[in-house]
Amino acid sequence: MTKKEKAVLVCERLKEKYPEAVCSLVYDKPYELLIATRLSAQCTDARVNIVTKDLFAKYPTLQSFADASLTELEEIVKPCGFYRNKAKSIKEMAALIISDHNSEVPDTMEKLTSLPGVGRKTANLILGDVYGKPAIVTDTHCIRITGRLGLTNNTEPHKVENDLRKIVPAAEGSDLCHRLVFFGREICRARKPLCGECCLSDICSSCKKEAGSE
Image 1 (tube, rainbow, N blue to C red):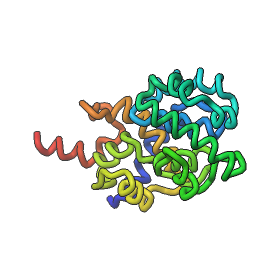
Image 2 (cartoon, one colour):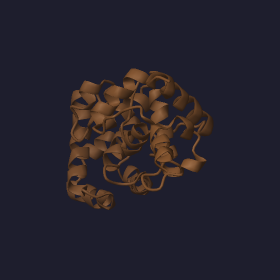
Image 3 (cartoon, rainbow, N blue to C red):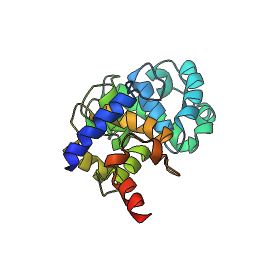
Image 4 (cartoon, rainbow, N blue to C red):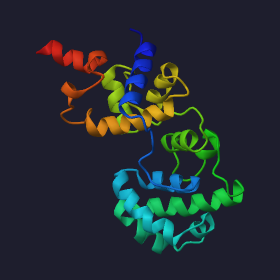
């Protein structure tokens, strides 16, 4: 089986297991997803959703974020960790979207990654979820699971993204990454993966190696 054939099979099986491929971050507006994703760095989505409930209520518009007191913004996002850097980049990001992008979240990788605090992972999430463009979000679950499956030999996010773009159907990439998050939390955990309950165990390179060593 080629990597491309395996990737297609992974997409099919995870689609069956997790029909609803949705982002676990709660948001209503594109810029809210951008902000929530910025806060999610080194923080759980569950905690981010608790913080953003109050955050988005206090700052209901992009302009209100641009005009926000940095000290007050820091205090609200503090539970997400690295709060000074995150608050600063959120305030600057909002101002730049207003001044340079006519208050619209950009729809290209180049423009998104030019915003403060926005890397390829965040940009891919926006491109896939907001604009429906081909995207591969290489978060920790994606990198760990695709490595175990044998779809990539790399661990660097950008290299994993490049590897997966070559084998994952373009229309499936964004949804697959959401499903990998659910799958990673439930079955293919970082510690003690539940291989006996896994719908991909028969095509998983890591599982086969473990079986061969017993």
